[in-house]
Length: 472
Image 1 (cartoon, rainbow, N blue to C red):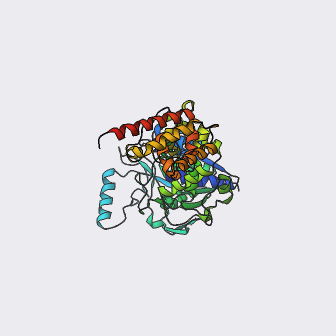
Image 2: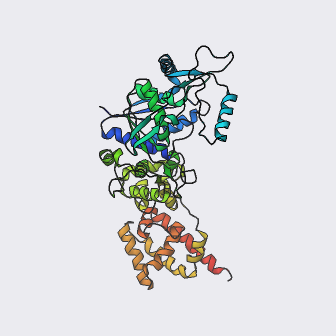
Image 3: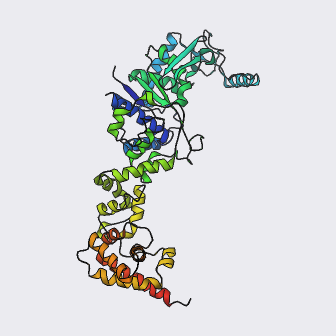
């Protein structure tokens, strides 16, 4: 049997972390078994579904690189098929029209709650025959078995038993004729040949209802695997403050999609103590039987660590392509600065995101810089004047302008002044980059080039002279 999975988001919001992980698990399982992944948009909730959300989901999937084999399908384009399934269930006595008014249903629920009973439909119209009352609205309900148990064989949770008498006759068609979520999902799974349903375990309680409808329509049960939810680090439901934002926000913050996927797969799945996987390794090793039962915890610091590993190990060409839009957005032009290749190579081990690479590289682009006030006040003092003057004289004569010779020149100045290397390198670093943190001093000088280094050292000398001339 060929494996067919599906990723069916509802377009009521963006593609968030939980949805992206579900898509990833389905994608990996299909790829591992040489199967297919179906992509469909479950937009039967027309009041809450938006085109903006559809676009955001597509954008997130594309950025993550989670391609699909069939689709996209939109449920709102399949209403005729759903109506046919509803008619079939009615003809076969597996569904019925319900004429209960909203007032009656509300009274029924209130009375059940007053008796501390679980609110559910009482089957009032279940055995009704003949036409309904004049002017009454009608919905269609599925005739759920009233006795026995339904057992869901779940690949994550094991056998889960549901008592049928705990389930009411759910609505499968609204009064305006539109199908409900449970009916549409089941029909889609049948028609699209879904063999494995991998989804969040918040859907586990929906499964017996869907199984009843599926078998009522003559369908074959897929394999179910309900994945644990993702919580925040405090153990509470993941929210925006924890990181439950659009996956494209992680793109905007400078994360690599392959790093985010690597992090997501480890939220609920493990392979020994391994932490970092290529996509090919994940396809080879991923299996739903290794998914944990307990909820996973989202940890942004761990995500940053994973992204940092990718920045350090990714091919330089990959980082150049990924970083270019951020350099362009920051208006950092290689015409007045180093090549992106050199800037990225200098910063990749010092940054956790692409944005951080760009931010740390700002001082290497453009002609002039602003000194960080605290760094200038502490470092660019009267004591730094002889150091900077000696550096200017020595660096003027450096030829060629490359890292080994630059390093030797700075060391020579330190030796001539009887200072440690750091006592010379730090004033030089503030002079040429504006701050106290940068790549190694020879790397920083090489990135800037001779003319800009000497011009910035001259400006730092003037700053020191001006500061020392001020009355104390």
